[in-house]
Length: 184
Length: 428
Image (cartoon, rainbow over all chains, first blue to last red; front, top):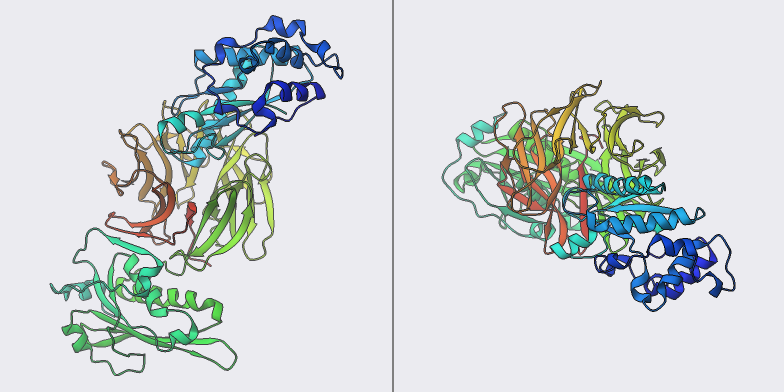
C-alpha cells in the first residue's frame, strides 16, 4: 500500500508531505471528498514551485515541485487525491471526482517520466469473478477519463481481493468501491 | 435387488431419532424438513475401527445423512460385524429399512481389509457383501466408497461420497487451495500463496485444477497437476485473466480476458496458446460454464444494464438471456444432466441467495437458502447436492444443500474463511 517513487524528488515530497505515504497508511483512509476542493491546479504544476528547495532536485521532476509548492501552509490538504469512489455495481466516474482525474492528469502531463497505474477495486458482495471484471471496468473508466486529458496509465483489477476497509456495512463497502491511482 | 421405491414403500410412520455421536463432531447437519422420503438405515460402527484409527461407521452415516435420502443411526450398543447373524425382522420391527455392519483388520503387509454387508430389513435379505484392501491413508476413501455402494444399491444412482471438493482458505494474508473429500475432511493443500487464489475448476478427468492466482500482482490463469504438483500458466495476457471453465471433453477452457479493456470470453486450448474470442460486447462478460453437452456456454453479462445470466453457442453467435427475475443474477452452475441451473440472485433487500432455475421446464426460480451472503454454487457430479459458501458472523463457510433446500450441512469449519468451492468429477 506504499508508493513506489519514481525519483528521489518524488520520494522526498512523499516523505515531506504525505505523512501517510512513508508510514504506510492507506491512501483511502482520508476521505477524498474533503480534499477534492483543494486540489492543486495545473498552473502550480507548470511553475514548478518549490523545486529549488531541494538540493538533489533533477529538473524533470515537476510533480514534486507541484506538491511542495502547494503544500506551503496547507500541507495536510495539498495532496492530490488519488482515489475515485463508485456506487454499487457502477463504474461511472461521478462529477465530484473530476478534480481527482484532472489533477492527476496534470501531474502526468507535466512529468512525462512519471507513470501511474489505475487499480480497480470493489466491495466484497457478489462473486469474486464478477467483481474482478467490475474492478477492471472501473480502472478502465478512470483510465479513459485520463486518456481524454492526454495521459495513458496502465490498469489492473484486484476485484474484491484488496479491501481498503474491513466490515460488513455500507461504510466499509463504500470505501472499497474505488479506483486508486498509484505511481509505478 | 429391491428398488428404493420398494424400501420406501415399506416405510412406516415410525420416527427414528437422529444419532449424533462422532459424526456430529465432523459437521453439523441442519434438517429443516424431514420427509417420509428418507430411508431409515442402521450403520453399525465397524469392528476394530478404533484400532485402524478411522471411524468408518460414523463417516458412512454422515455421508448418507448429508445426502438427504437417509436417516442414519448407529447400532445402539449392538456389537455387529459382517459375519454377524442378523435378524432383519428385529431391525425392521425397530423401524429400520436397512442395516450395514462390517469390520476392518490389519493385514500382514500393513494394509487394511475393510469388509461389510448391507441387508434389506424389509425383504430380509442381503444386498451387498464387499471387501476392499487399502493403505492406511485411504481408509477414509474406503469408507466413502462403502457409502457410495450403499447409496447406489438403495437409490439406484451413483453416490458422490468418494469424490473431492476444491476450495480456497483465506486466513489473514495467507491463501491456500485445498482439496478434500466430499465431506470436507482429509484435506490436502496443492497451493499455498501470500496472494489471493480464486475460481478453482476441475479438469473432467479429475487430475488437474485450473485456477486464478494473483501471485504476480495480477490475475493469471494456471493449471496444476494434482499428483505431481507441476503447474503451468495458460493465460497471462494484458489485463486480467480469470474464470477458467473446462470443456466437458477436457480439451479446451473458456476464460475471461480483458485484453480488449473489458472482460470478455475467450476459448483456449488446454495447453495454452492463442485464444479465440467468444463474445464481443462493450460490457462485462465473465463466469462462463459449459453445458454438459459442450455446445453451449452459460455466462454472466451486464450488457442489459445489470448482471444477468446468458448463454451462447460455443461456436459463437448471439447470446440469449436466461435469467429475467431480479436485477442481479451471477455465478451460474449447470447440473450434470443440463436441466437445472443454480446461481446467486441478489434480492431486493440486498441479500445474495442461492437460486435454482429449471432450464428445461422454465418457470420461476426457486430460492434454496434463507441466508444472505451466499456465493459460488457448484453441483455434485450426481446432481443431487450443491456446495456453496455462506457467511455467518463475518466468516465464509462451506455448505451443502439438497436441491429442495431442505437439508443443509456445514462442512469442516475453522477460524478462517472458506471460499470458492468446486465439486470434482467422479474420477479421482
